[in-house]
Amino acid sequence: MKSFYINCGIIVFALILCAYNFNTGFGEDHDSLRLIYGATKSVNANHLTASRSWGFPLYEIIIYKLLLQENGILFAKIFSLLFLAASIIIFNRILRRINVPATPALLFGITFVCNPLIIIAGNSLIETSMSLFSILLTINYGIKIITNPGKLWHQYIIYGALCGISTLIRPDNLLYFFALLMVEMMRTNLNVKMWTAAMLISVSLGILPYFMLEYPIFHHYPTPARNHFLYLLKNLVCTFGLLNIPLLVFILFKMRKSSTPINRYTDGTALYLNVIIYFAILRWLLLPDEIEYGIIIWPAVLLLIAQLSRSFTGSIKQLNVWLVAMAICTFLPNLWQVYFIDRIGTANSFSAGIGPGVFAQERYRREYNSRLLHFKDSVNYLNEKFHLGIDDKTRAFTENRNCENCIVISDLKVRRDSNDHKADSAKRKFIFVPEVSESRGRRNLLPYKRPPTFIDKNLRQIP
Image (cartoon, rainbow, N blue to C red; front, top):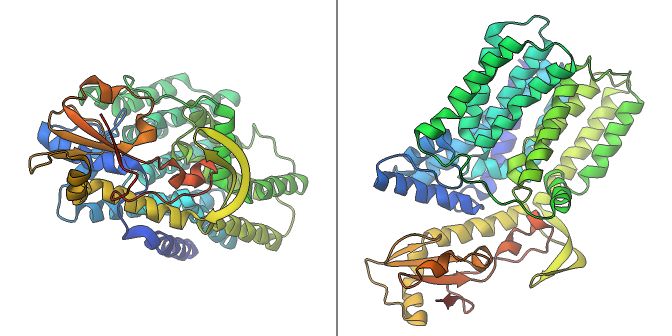
């Protein structure tokens, strides 16, 4: 019964946090726009099409149907919110599985939802919350297999199916299938036949549908950033919060010092969570400029602390004080952002300061993306400024399209190194807005700059 009230309390708290920007736009990530365009594109093509990169078929097949309804964007955001609530329930279920007392479980849950990435996942049109739920569900079942003394076929079949479904939401989620496999290899209790069956089921459910739908999996892979190490450090700060990193180090050190010794090979759950964390870091190294791709590292670290707390010899009161401090440090970046770098042109220089937090930055980005979606609201202004000859048949897009009567509006930074707009520029006209990457300053530890409006003197046309 306590668990029910804990779930309800944390979900209500998450709803309050997500409500701040829920009614503003549909998402701070430009990928939210691509999902809206993808829904229209699928209708025109009369088959399911990928919204971007390799595609996210299980999410897209549901979200496209929602988006095509009246008030579709509202339904899509509610869909994300429901999966955040489901993620909270699974997170608390894992805490119960590793026997965390009620009060620390409540504090772990509150800390979990205070993270800006989690809040954004819950109130935006994006697959992050659904993906997070699927990975947590897989982790929960993986821990069940680890803590079960016997080896049962159906457990590995279910595990393979869960990993397959997770992969169908995001193809890179297949990476986490191998976490439990590595744990059993390190603990020398690997059953090859069972794992072969799990792999076949995971591939059949998670990979084959991409080929059946003619999705570009394995054909399109985003280009990673060059300086992986610096991006990794940046992602750690952006995910955990500047104050939380030393606090987490302190807590882990004190727990190790004040805990009964644990053999990491006999404590399979701690080992499993460690491997999940390593895989999340590996995912960041493959594409470090996308923080959400490694979002599972946040609940995994919290669950690892919860697992280690089982052998903590200090008082529960001391543990609760640490968790309250962690929750506060996790929440603060929503209000204020600390930055250390300023960017002038392409050059970076040291410049420390404090600016608006994630709540404000996300709101402006959501408004900016909404203006992109309703680009034609600025049609008269653009006609007058650039003499574009726009008529009712002219279509406007926020990404490059293969069409003859198009206007493409984009962030100059996105197109700077691209030759796409030069290929057949006679067929399209390009409108570039000032660079807005700094309007997501928290992701780059840069001072925040509010994104421009479209009716702006800095708008310029590049032939």
